[in-house]
Image 1: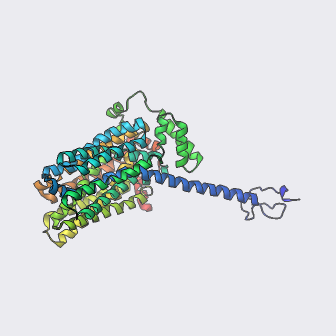
Image 2: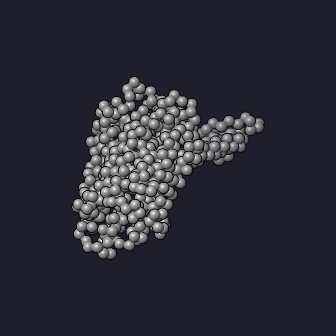
Image 3: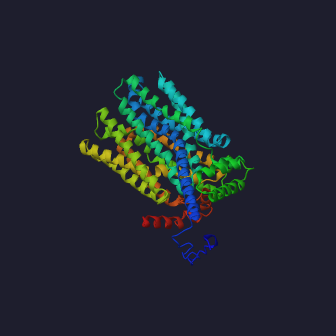
Amino acid sequence: MGMTGVQENGHGEMGMSDFPLGSKNKYKRMDSVFTDDGDQYQLEKRKKSTRKYVFGCAVFASLNNVLLGYDVGVMSGAILFIQQDLKITEVQQEVLVGVLSIISLIGSLAGGRTSDAIGRKWTMGFAAVIFQIGAAVMTIAPSFEILMVGRILAGVGIGFGVMIAPVYIAEISPTIARGSLTSFPEIFINLGILLGYVSNYAFSGLSAHISWRVMLAVGILPSVFIGVALFIIPESPRWLVLQNRVEEARLVLMKTNENDSEVEERLAEIQQAAGTADTDKPVWRELLSPSPALRRMLITGIGIQCFQQITGIDATVYYSPTIFKAAGIEDESKLLAATVAVGVSKTAFILIAIILIDKVGRKPLLYVSTIGMTTCLLGVGITLLLMKEGSISIALAILFVCGNVAFFSVGIGPVCWVLTSEIFPLRLRAQASGLGAVGNRMCSGLVAMSFLSVSRAITVGGTFLIFSVISALSVAFVYKHVPETKGKSLEQIELLFQDEYTFQGGEVQLEDVEHLVQK
């Protein structure tokens, strides 16, 4: 008999050719080998292609955040030259620095509604255009008043970009990598800050009239790449489902998930979430009179956004030259060089969060971050209050400031945006995330606009002691109001907020401990 009469029985029994056939046999039929290898090759090829595609989408969607980071970083040095060139007062300096954050809340408020109307990715494009116009006006501004007009336009553009990027990335990302990918906007904010610091240092040798204009003009470049990105990245599948464009949503999910069964499972969950929404009730009315579950979501989302800023991170970044000057550094170039160290620390340590956020979880990183920030902020305050100006004071100030931004980047910096992009129901996600971004930008603006005045009243060291107390309160907030969302789909996360027990030291805290022990 020939080989055609041989049957594989799956139990390793002897076939008619005297070779054991089946699952344990190392001598497989040639056609079986080709089929298995071909399937495995196609599967691996699809996995690699999917990961690259989603990674590329996350990178392109995060480019708007470079604009925010660059503006924060570059203004810390540019303000020194603006003051010399335009002869602005200290109050005008505070207003110029802080107004961007305050005005950006307009963009964040409008961004949710806009993204629901025209889509997530075109909202990102709209944000880039507005920022470009604002940056161009600032670059050629002949007076403080015109500079403020450009600053306001840039702030509106940044407000749009900051709220929409995490929402978009969360909605296209597979569950297993959502935390890492949704952290990308914070990475790009840090990268922008670092680029701003480097720009300050690079162009500080130019005349006061030219240097700050060149520094601000460089910020226009990232928005050019955003225009290119709009023709590459897809629309959010969840937004497409809300528009009844289900087949388009399926095509996007096929590009962003590794197998067809997961595509159908995700699509079914999205359709169910969209179908259970109360479409007769306007989104803003639902947000203003929330159910108990939605109220818990809003407390968590808006609260973590506010704590991210009222602990003083933007004041630390904007006014790091002022802090180091209080510690004893007098040379202008050395001040700017020290701020570069701050930018490097802030950017480098976020890589730790990217690696751990989907392994350890969101909540343990928040604990490490808030406790570490509290310690470093207290250290800055004590150093500036109790130690005389000198090399030791300078070294400790730089160490504690760099430590503060490092702990910020490890946890509350990126995790804040991850949480607010994943905890809200599909129908409310964009506009509720916009509310969180409004809280973030408002707190940032208030801190930035008051830092110099408060520091003059109670000293820079006393201001940092206040920041350390607020940071200590953020630890308690994380314990009581933040659930663990690692490894859950966006639709499953909604269920965490249905049961108040989740927030009372129950299952979530035990899970956190287990993860930490395993590590």
